Length: 415
Image (cartoon, rainbow, N blue to C red):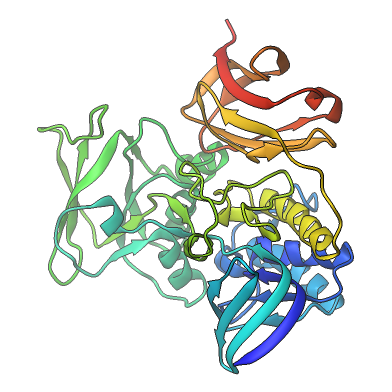
């Protein structure tokens, strides 16, 4: 076994990992190492050739590869070493990392660790779609990889299950490649993608969206021949008599993303059941001191720029921990109230301004976002529209946190 010692080890070389590594380096960590299981740095954005990245970070619309190249160039400029084709097998509470790579088995001891493993797509097996198991069923991300990186055309006539952002983007991409997208079916009564993607990827191309619908049957033996759509009730059960068979040769699944937290769980880190990511404080430190988490492994983001900005905070915190800088206890707990699915971070201090990230449970219009400590209202924000697909961020000032023991976030009708 090959042994190495570093100040900050970053697990993952995607948007979160590169931003975290750069931040750690710029904040005084002398020896930073990036560990990436893929062949190249950049992660999933290497296959995201559409525009829309970089508006928050750089003030310009970039494709995924263009966006990541800016970070890769910065990593090279700061001479931050990285390991490619290297699979992390284990992260332990004593901050040792076991890595399998072409060069052999490594044991890397680090003063601090940043978890940036990203997320993965839910599969057909996880949503229990009935029917045969023919060729032509893909997750939206797999289809994106085949088309954008490998140059394959995956089908002539497609149906997409789920209206997440990747599925919406792939509806447009398939259309541009000459395929016919016959329908996008969404089991929820509202789209789970960003409004801009609804407009640019479905409306602009006349692709129909069926809300409160799901696929109840996949037909075909060797290749998909058709799928059956049916309307669902408020409990998401198919309604008899609403079935509609659509002939197609391809079914794409865009049915949600799940943080890649197997390493996190194995390390004994506390997990939030709502986000499926780690429980963290305002420094993005997990329940194990010196191990930090950020990006889609912490909670699934809607905009990659927010991943990079969040990772900057994790990198700074990991560098400070590696340098032995002390932090005051974080005793203010955040709690999601009425209408709010989750709030991050889970714990705060009253020593500095802090940015909270949250998602609502359901779409709503003309509501008040209220932050209180249980006894008094700390901040109220008017929202003309909220959507589960769009993450809300709220900054609380140091003076607003003074005297707080908890922060409860809730929605209330503005009328």
